[in-house]
Length: 231
Image (tube, rainbow, N blue to C red; front, side, top):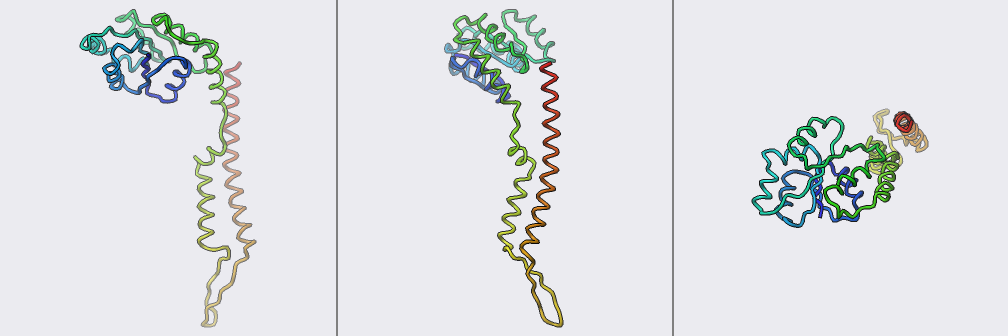
């Protein structure tokens, strides 16, 4: 059984997907990790941890002292780090040479193989397929490139404005009336439904055009950045 410790739920899922044949307990904090160690004791084969959380676990050798209290052998540890974490890595590596490290880079197609290899070095019985892991990794990268325009419009509040306008229209009625005083008596005049609809569509058109232009600009910017990476 693998204990994976990562605060970002999206990254936790990606890392778990690369080891889909294994039983994995994933947690978001050091406290939860210690709880799982107490709960499963001898059932843990390896710990995989975000290097910043690992640093906290190793503070005052807490994780090793906990295992000693439980009368169990501390599981081997593999840690992944990102650019900027090199100092933490060097510090941990100096004090704990038995740990394995792998650099996490979501744009690196070779990461799945490096990740699995690092785990196998301390856990030879790992049940993982590197080729399958690469396929999963590439598929997730491709899905990250797509932008959902409907979701974007919803986040910008445009769809809410349309719904709000519909509700308001239903409450007010299709035909709106203008009330005026003339010669001491109240007269009403029905506004043209066609005029109301034309104004409504004009307003929606200019709002949609503005947001579409913003979306188009974002897509072009994203496309350019992807092309630079591929080059």
